[in-house]
Image (cartoon, rainbow over all chains, first blue to last red; front, side, top):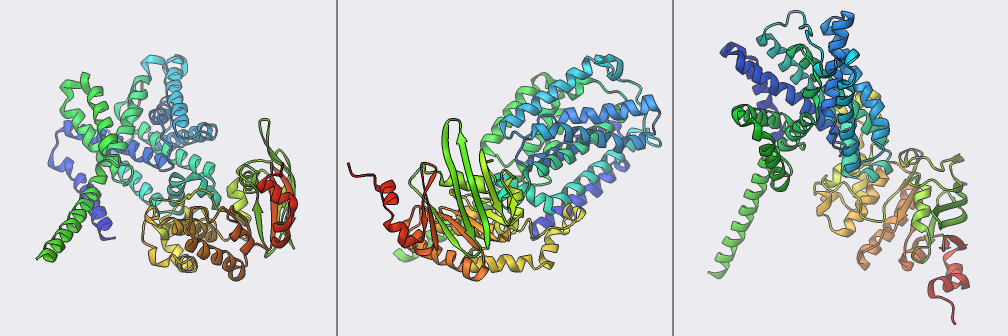
Length: 325
Length: 254
């Protein structure tokens, strides 16, 4: 499809353009905001993979926490190199997802949603009530930066690179046999199973891969902020990640990125009204689900079908007038 | 050769006995009908055979392997594929993509290739696109291959359900009420397709159906259930005259 190629080319152009941002502006405030957008994009993109199975996880922040704490602990206590800690932290998060997913994914729909919600709460509680190992309420401080990455500008490139990596992997998965099987399970799980698709295997695998990238984002967060604490990974972050994905639209791979970009920017612009943000975002989420269930990325398709409809209608009208004449 | 053997299969739901000690066999190349009044346990038995339910007693043996209680995807992998009573399709996908998803088992590659997008192009190389087109041609759906499944008329949706099942390369097909809600014309077409599936694709069939014209018209042998029990088995002519069957359907004269 030509349309698809154009969109991909535009996306590629935007990514290349983003590489030049630190050249254009040295204002670290902008760098910081973009880094947060990239981080949110990775989280929302990886949540989308899980949502491709038809299940919604409300524990994504908990898996981000798993990656962040794993990396922080490995580096501060065992002296592991930060670069080595990144993939290990992501793998730990993925392994945790397998352990949690095998029992939790036996239920589906709202039940899985509730199980994941409970898991997210439990993770925060465990962190808070284990000060000896996990730092408790105060968290773990003095998390070192990766070698060679010390300025906000260099973190910018790292975040951009990780986002691009996530996007590429998700794009490849989308069009693979695995991705098609996920779509089949979401479309109709009974029919998918009756043509030989194992629901459990695919759901657990998607959950693990999604949480791998959540863990990676967590590890990045830990070394960028240099501090991890339980409150940044509580359910309100899971809620935000879900909003990025839903409002951007999970039907298109760029949806979560657009959602993360638009909402994170709004959050930043209306920072003064932060105390009202949950109300505003709640309203946005409800309105999106009511009037634009496909998210922002479904708008072009909607406009297209509207134009086509009008075309057909006007065509009919013309026919009618010519008939009456 | 016996392809499918049902041995003393029972299925209870709490205190309700849905299927009660049913035995029967299906030979290779046969079309077997499974009939009975509403609530006789036909669909439950189908669900036990295809792995949706685990039987409480008895065994389901397919090609000399015990498949009782195996998950539906495993059963499908062994060559026993079912269709659904309701019109269950991937409604938001095109007709062609529906059939492609059916090829999941056949299009098996190694793990890494599974995760790569070359999958769609490897489908082309493996002639799976050609096979998908053949199946759609066979089922009379080729002219609508780019339509969304949800936009098809009912009869064609049912045919698409069978096409998806055919794509997963079955040796035996279980059709659950294939002509429900069809008009006489669509029913005739489906009857011819059922015969064609056996003659041309060499697939053995078990058909659950309420439409007696279809059952009598296509089946070599009929198994009759009532209240979960098998009450009769035989060729259509014998079943038509069987006293117990007539009583089960029409009731006993007071």
